[in-house]
Length: 302
Image (cartoon, rainbow, N blue to C red):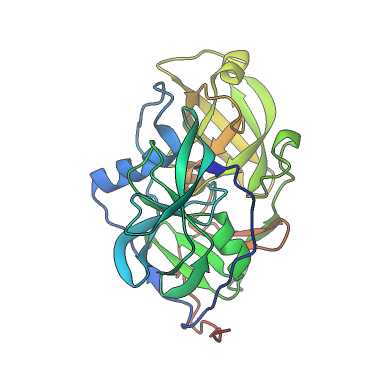
């Protein structure tokens, strides 16, 4: 997760491929842990117990293949790059990551292709300290109207033009906490119970985090802290209860709780994110199944 304080601008884009292709990340532990650094490294207090998979898509910048990009619904940006890849750095912006705020470069405008979808960005943030990786943030999905699908049993991601039918629990994003009113991403209201004590929180649903974490001071209010983590029951009215171990962090200005792919995997097998101009919806299928519908809808270029 990285949050940029740079002013959001409207960007050009085109969709010139048939949606419905899936993208499968490497299963290497190094790739998983390195990607998880977007969300969990920097505070010095969080250990990876059993990180869930993150999901990636191939990324090309100005026609050059630059590797995979982590799909990051907790990132308030369009594109994150691990290197400038020959693009000019034209500005410097402040970004909020685990560990605090830091200044990073902002590139010139550029064309890119991600997962076969062509787009143009006004710029990308480059080289955050918490991850030597590329990332694809919320702004890409909000401007493109693409439905993001991720599946755990199939271990892959897909870009679709609509949410598949056939059931599933569909619900809207929760309103962000007041201090994050300008960060329009995927928030969920949850009840967190530790040692028999429960507290209502609004958590950020973050595909760029391999592990669920919460603010250490809140965990201390709820119960015993052991080895920088707590065993917790996390309940959402639409998804039920998940029993997981929650890591702890102390970085100021982040949401009180970040819900990672570990709890997503516990709650359901297939997840579909649909962003609108404001807010959006999530559809979750609990049982394993095909991530891509039998007849994906084609989207014309424009």
